Amino acid sequence: MSALEDTSVPAWCVTPTTPAVNTTGRHYTVVTVGPGASTVTEAWLAALAPLGAEAVRCIPADDGESAIRSLGPELARARVGWRLLIAGPADACLALRAAALGAGIEDDEMVIASTRTDGTTVYCAHCGTCTPSDASIDDTVTCAGCRRGLLVFPHVARRTGSYLGFMADAEVPAR
Image (cartoon, rainbow, N blue to C red; front, side, top):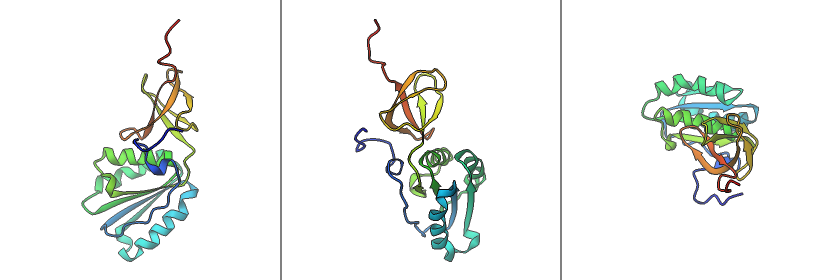
């Protein structure tokens, strides 16, 4: 695996995390993706209970795509003092983070707990297709679009919430 000192890959994509919630916000949306995230979100909801039920909304989701659909109205209602708490597999967390960033939410307005780090989505620099995979950094995955063998690079695109992939043998001269 590549050294991750100078990379855009969040630490929670490499090692599962369980950060504490900062209770200085005024309103919170807690997103739980998959069954493994409930322990984390239950602790967050307990910490936020003194704020009252009207200050905290919880969105349970089976997968990242349904979580993103459910998050849309929350992002539209977000105002100063709103915080987004996301718990789930790292690939779903990356996708949700990308949706939130695209809506203008800042990283410091989010708390992210990854429950698993074994799934990735790889963005093909050649055709633009995003390929779901179990590959790790420095592994090779076949692009679902152009079928090139892509090297999974230690870079995560904030816009797409996916790892960058480029042709693994791009620098090999043609014969």
